[in-house]
Image 1 (cartoon, rainbow, N blue to C red):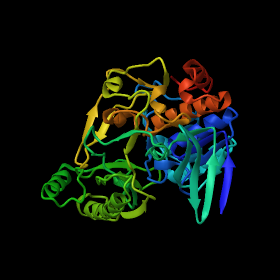
Image 2: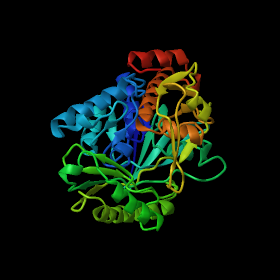
Image 3: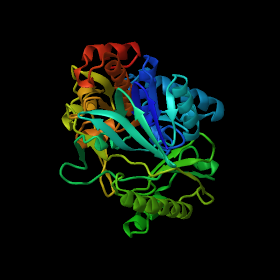
Image 4: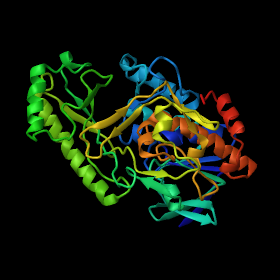
Length: 426
């Protein structure tokens, strides 16, 4: 069975970038359709359980991202104060910690309240083109073939799926090397003793024992034990961002191996914690999430490629459409360590040209698959910045649809003025 639906702006991917892009576009008056492959929204926030949303300010109390992303996060905070009292006590100046189940609900209500047409369980696996324009994206669902036609399309898939299917050139990995940052399966454990929650207290003796086990190859993860552990708002709950496995998220066979191995790592690391950390003797696995979380895959070749020096030197551009303050944070492919580079100043700009792919005339990209080198990706891949680029893409798509001109021909000043009216910081 075949069916056609039509909108002005079609957003593919309901993660941090897609949620904000669809709301920005729809609030301006564009008939906006948001397509998400799972039965809920949130992307890495919910399907991969990435609880730390970074970074809305520069660590010194100065906001660098506001607008619709800030409104969205404050909506999550409102619900968390009701259902997870005490969550606000775990916030840091530069990091907001969200509960995925609350975010699922807030995300759907946020987009529906903006009159966005939502399609869940919609996996886009084909694109219909006419010359250099996308005519429709195609969803297959249980025998149904649905053509979603639009004036402008926004790829917020995180992996540049629509851009790839459209023939846009892309980069993947570290320069000419097809190496990618590793995947992670995050988890929540319960049963942590009162003395070890909310702050995990590990003695020098315990650390020495874990170090010895790690050096002898008895720790199940390549990261140094105990890894990144964060208190959750509910008493006795700890969140772990510990597991690592190198894989290409765009390869189904590599992804299958990663999911299996990462789940094994979760169970083994819990056994390890029970044995070596006081207060963790009775911990249990409360939750893993829908899929392993990816940090990078495809990055489009756009009108400008954001570079490492642009980030580190805190460069601004005439066509700034967003700001960021997260430093360069790259996990080496084998997961054994990371590369961390601090900024020379408090924030940097992200140019509109990074959202505009070459070759296709009616496509924009937002989120971690924008045009950048792999080192710049280490900074702009975080979720608050993905939301900010999503807002810019939504505004631009609205203007492109309204004016009937390609996104690359829009006047940047007009985009910037609307973003300012939406309280974005550029």
